[in-house]
Structures are given as C-alpha cells and as structure tokens.
Image (cartoon, rainbow, N blue to C red):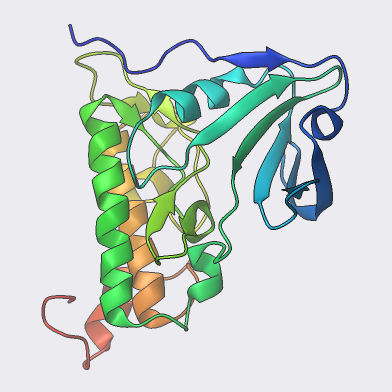
Length: 236
C-alpha cells in the first residue's frame, strides 16, 4: 500500500490576533466565502511584501494538511498556519495577477494552453497520490508574475482510499457550471469517478479562456465548440 503524502498539519499556537503576532497589516478583505474572510496583508516593515491570509473555523485543519503536504510547482503553498483564539489562519503567497477569472477575454491562445497544461500537471501529481481536488475553476487558478498557473483552494479536496476509484455523488462537491454531465444527472447514491470530474472541470476552464466567457450551468460545451468554425483543429 502506497504511503499517503498527507501529513499531520503543523499549526502554530498564537495567544493573540494573527496579524498582530505576524507583524502584518491588513489591507482589505478581497473575498468572503462560506469558510471565512480572505485578506490581503503586508509586512509592517516591508509593505511591498504582500500575503494572502485566509481565516477559517478552528475545526478546518484538513485544508492546512493538504496545503502543507503537497509539493508541486503549480500548486499553492502554505507559508504557515496558526491557531488564534477565535479562528484558524493560513498565510499564503499573494499573486499580483490574481486568478484566471480576471484574465478571461484578455489572454491569448498560447498562454491559455500553457496555463491549462500547468494545471493538468498539478492534477496529475494529485491523482498519482490518490488526491482529488474537486473544485477546479477559474477562480481557483492563480497567476504568478511569470504568468504561470497555480492551482489552489483545497477546501473540497479529498484523499481516495487505496484502490478505490469512485465516490458516491452525495460526497462530491464542486461549482455549478463545472460539473460533468454524469454528475449533473446523478442520484445521491450513484458512484462517480472523481478523477474524471477534475479533468472535465479543467476542460471547462480551457473552454472559458478560448471562448472568452465564463461557464454557465445550461451551456452545452460540446455543441458550442462544434458551432465555432474558426477553432484550430487541435483545440477542437
């Protein structure tokens, strides 16, 4: 049996606020999700050094475990994590170019292909280690200063038991618009291959970059692709 790459999370214990203890200055909340706020912060003595701090429930150490354990150039890394009196905080690198969602319509085909290949490499690494992401989407692919694509947000990620290829549909998360057809039609107890779901979601990311529009729940991606006559053959 292959050894799991996931290790117990290393979480510091802070007796006060994360930002104060880390000498960070909060600059603003960039997003608020179901789990908590996402804050941009800079070092007090080096304001040009910026970080993203995600604030979570104290019970959300599973996300920390994923981010600290995986090792791949196209996966977001956790700088460090700390448990504060009222919340759990994860500190990560700040990506000035934000996410692929902000580049839809402003990115050429060559760079789109590069980004998708890089995310595919990240997924191959995860899948080889029995890990599934389950929320591949434009908003979860960050772009660094060299225009490399970095896959992040492991909030829905799971480790598959050795030798198991499927999960019940009721145990699989994701985002509307990125679901594969078999997932959209599945009953709660239907067995679904989550590895294929990751691949399908990545294809939706590529479709969005090529067609310069975001994903939609009622779009038939195959039909729309067949209608577009000016696509290069290797894309079609």
